[in-house]
Amino acid sequence: MTRPDLSVDLFDFDLPDDLIALRPAQPRTAARLLVSRQAGLRDDRIAALPEILSAGDILVFNDTKVIPARLSGERIRADTTVAVEANLIERIDAAVWRVLARPGKRLREDDRIVFSGGLAATVEAKEEGGALRLRFERSGADLDAAIAECGVMPLPPYIAARRAADRQDEHDYQTVLACHAGAVAAPTAALHFDEDLLDRLAAKGIGRATVTLHVGAGTFLPVKSETTGGHVMHAESGMIDAQTAAQINAVKTAGGRVISVGTTALRVLETAAADTGELSAWKGATDIFISPGYRFKTVGGLLTNFHLPRSTLMMLVAGFIGLDRMGEVYRHAIAERYRFYSYGDASLLLPS
Image (cartoon, rainbow, N blue to C red; front, side, top):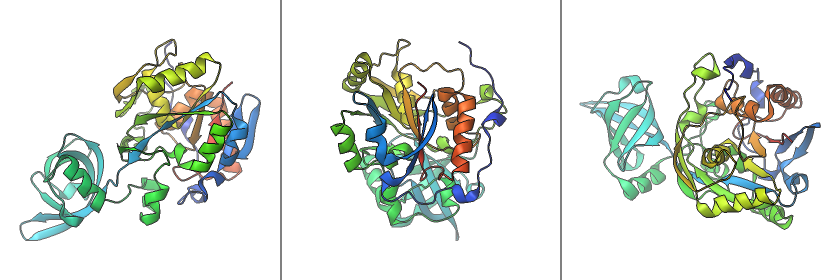
């Protein structure tokens, strides 16, 4: 089936600034939940998930772990220094990262930057689009340890523009299931879960599985084309193992629903699934772009936060529940003053 080439304007909306959440709900499970079924919309809470879902369903989480990817330091050139902030966005090899830096225009090849804690790097190249490649003077696990020591949590730009990251974000911006380090942004739908909620879901007979997708900074990049057909999706690396694939296949065979916790877990599932919907082990990079007209192969429900206008995440939501229902969901969320974006509330989308 050929997907329609749609105007990006269809995914636009106006959001009052005071609906952008700067901190998460406390406790995590107190966040509001807008449930969308075929019959209509209902307001609820994340804490009610064990009563909303059915025994035999399975929740699939992304277990990536966010690294403290924002580094502060100084460019050193002759007798002058300039303050520099670098955000790691993609690892190239053991010692090289692609970064977005400020002030990027004042940096040039061979400039040396010394970050807090003494971690140093040299600008290896400037790329089109404004990114830089930094070659660090440490590599491998030694570099990982240094970044963990001197970096801070890479809050999304719509939060970072309003406040600085602090120690609380080290907890708040990490999911309870995080274990595989490599993301530079959190899989935010999973931020709503704590151990107690996971235990209550298990007691209800609702399964749990994990996949991995290392979320990149591209998740925040705007769609610059005028239509969906002109957009090129960023690639992210991840995996699903054979045991997890078999676990999810068994749930589907038994008639249970596969509920993806977040768009990143969904992208892994849809990448790894055959046209029949059967999952197999997968490892690699995916640039899958989901928009209206996409035929979903394995996911039957989606728990996700409220996304930025004109974003690929909005397009994925519209692909999952349709443009008309997407509009209903977002109009309702704004009218009822749900909190938006990474630290905001969530929606549970159940198409049928």
